Length: 267
Image (cartoon, rainbow, N blue to C red):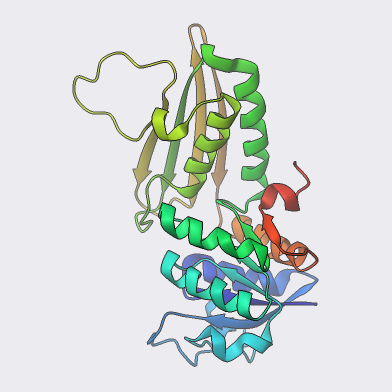
């Protein structure tokens, strides 16, 4: 059994991860953390994940439970994740990271740890979304520069980063397939008299509201036809199950940088 620790256990994904960890046949919950000073410290983690009491209490310091897990799954915040990966590196613990919203400097700091421990970083852990990444690469290479490309995403009102990490990753896949520099061609909003659309643009549209778990659509548009590749998540368990699957896989790896494409054999 792989003992999993969950950072950010009080969040929506954290609760789903507790449930997914207990449902997976080869994993068990080893530890769970919440933010420093949280009123949930001392609460049984199973009560958050709706799986009954597990005898594992929530803590606000991962160092206190470092010997109680084999792999850490982290869906917290950029600053917290950087502290966690530093600690994991010091204790030779693999880490699965679903945190989004890293700055360029934070991303560079994070990736440096791949030389010390197995590090799995993914914008989205859903099996379906990762299949979409593969399909987007194929579609972009086949359709080429004759099609305008736009990325649409929608999430719940509480999501703090925009566009979503998944949408950005979709843009990266598209730009790579089309041999474009995403930093130069991405458009994250349009307003006013903007003029005709440049052909090499990759546009992003963001919607926030309600309890939308996550919708993503990429449109390839040309005169006379449109191709759309869409993924819609109805439950966070789609992401949690993938992250737990990734943790089991990552425990068997040596140091390096991986993502869900590696876990699913889609390279």
